[in-house]
Image 1 (cartoon, rainbow, N blue to C red):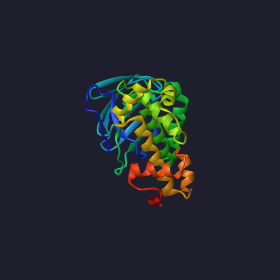
Image 2: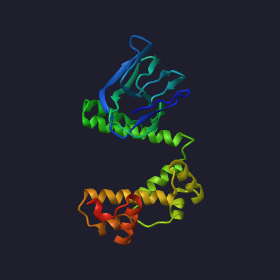
Image 3: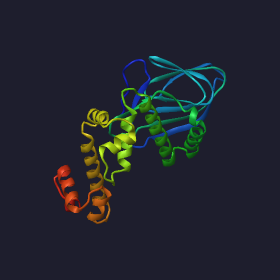
Image 4: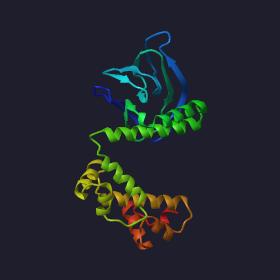
Length: 260
């Protein structure tokens, strides 16, 4: 499901990234040869463009002066207006979000600069075009969209980058015992401030969040692998089966045997 920001100016939108997009069209475009202005709507498709020349891009409520290395993301059903400042070369892809996709809409920038990584972005967009609406094209585009989301989060004052760093650090250390002070030191903020971020954005304490993630990982390994429960306990920093049993019963009301 897709949501668009309704506030103005239109600087961000929301897009579900919990399932891969499906590329419907991708090509190299050269505009401004016959007309200095283009306007169109894609009723059912989103569009992503990587600009290699300057242009002016307008969505309702906001104008953008585009430079080489800028990326624009146009939500479906939104009218795009372009004013070309001479010939403009760009790489584009039109895509749809699968109807079965669920999950929260991720904050996405309408326009973002990737000039710091333009070579790789150009390679990836060209790979999407060459893959011709295949699963490979979908996978490459999905990765780029997640990168745009991460750029938006870093630039969104309402989402502290420390929270993202903390959750990433936790994922890499779920198999180890650690203290909240270790996490706070690795992220570079106080444990009090970090705890406040988790309560606001995850509605849980840091300890509660870590416990939930360890239980989720243990459940997955029990359900989908043949590893012994004792080995799985060590993979989620539980010292023995008794502690693993307690972890799972607190989260799901059942011990390890129930998941097999």
